[in-house]
Length: 401
Image (cartoon, rainbow, N blue to C red; front, side):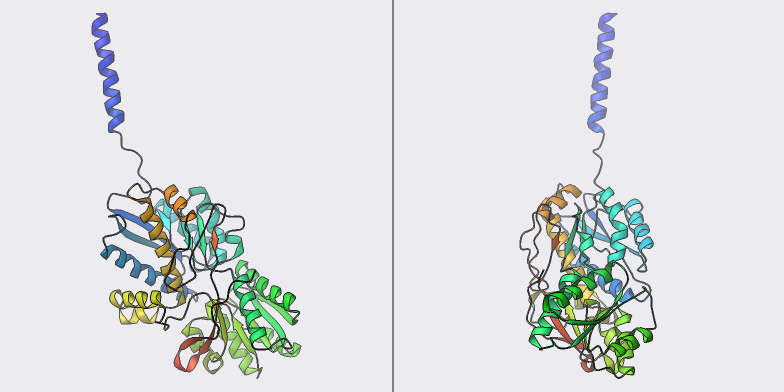
């Protein structure tokens, strides 16, 4: 009887052991033997849709290219997208949907500054590998978020560096300076750069005006600038606001030198501004799409012509380039993880990135333990509205902190 019980016990233990061995290890979110699911939360509706649509087109170009090359370590890429309409609460809902319904592995698109701020607590909680190359503000990496990697200078760095370069190279020290900016995280970072340049160069700032997101009428703001005698304007809008400010300045016959942040590096801004859209300056960290002397640009535009329709090609802009840079960075980290792909491994590989080359689309990218921001050199561009293009007005400028 005892021997029979022992045999039963042994059989039971063996059965348990076999059962445990047969139990599959929990799969990493968004990863199968053949596929990696990545996500993007970007505005593809409303006025800022110019940003999100261009971003998504570039991700589609990268997705088709990488899959045509056999995928990453044998896994094809599948990108899912959610439209936040440039609204912070919708951005949070969007990332939750991508994680909990679409089961994404990581993020390669995170919308505007305020939208990413709204998503950060959830991204941190879920430990999602995230590349942000769309809208860069200091709050995105100060303090650093373990899984969030930011590419490009902050608006503060971008504005400060460009303003200092323009003032010194164009001898604008005696001008009367003004800023009109959006009253959120984005605008606060733009204002930071303006204030740094004003303080460090001892400039005469005669007007400092904020406006609510979605403002359409800037007549009062520009009348205030005219009364203050402003001759240099830093435009701190997102997209349409730049053209509205320039048109209002022309209406009031104000001879302004205008510098805008990189969201004005868009041909629709030139078109909306009409005659007033010729000759304004833009601070950016990626070259114009027309600059095919840049190897990375020539390659990207060649792929775009291969995978996009003629109408889609017309929708590309500088946000396509930053999206493509972010996707290449994510691809490199995933590739270095090999077949044993986990979120933790991708975060580790991103952290160890040193001088990742983008073939001239941006400065080499580097991160480190506790360092989640890789700034880039800055260009000052000038609007050539008559030919619907932007031209370089400076050599690459090192970021001035």
